[in-house]
Length: 123
Image (cartoon, rainbow, N blue to C red; front, side, top):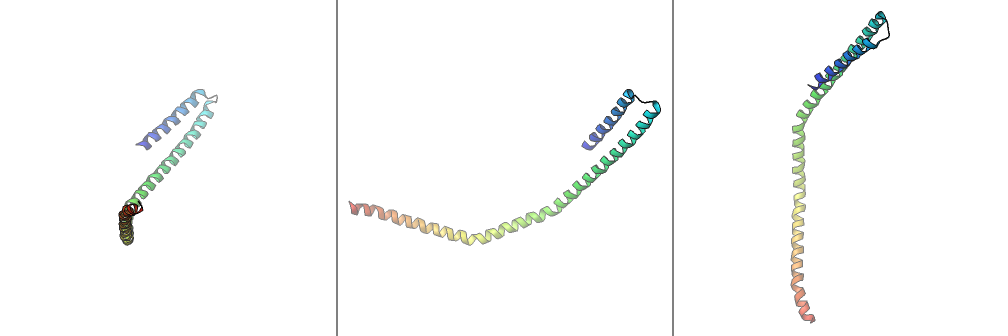
């Protein structure tokens, strides 16, 4: 829809530009007609170029969309596999860390129990 609006705008601009040239041209009729023919050919050529580029963009978008649709599931699966591998590799370390934390908490509890008895002995 945007491409149609764009092309309609270009066509409107070309036609209005040609009309302005017709009414303000200080040339003779023959020279003016020749000039108009050249301008029309140039405008048609530019319009064809725009259409060609638009088709290239559409084709590129279609290709990109197809590539994304084809590669997305494999990317998601690869990410899942990587996450599972990471989780498996880190699990023993997590268990070790939990055990170390428990040991530290037990040590702190022992120290806390001994502190009041040491204070009583010092008094």
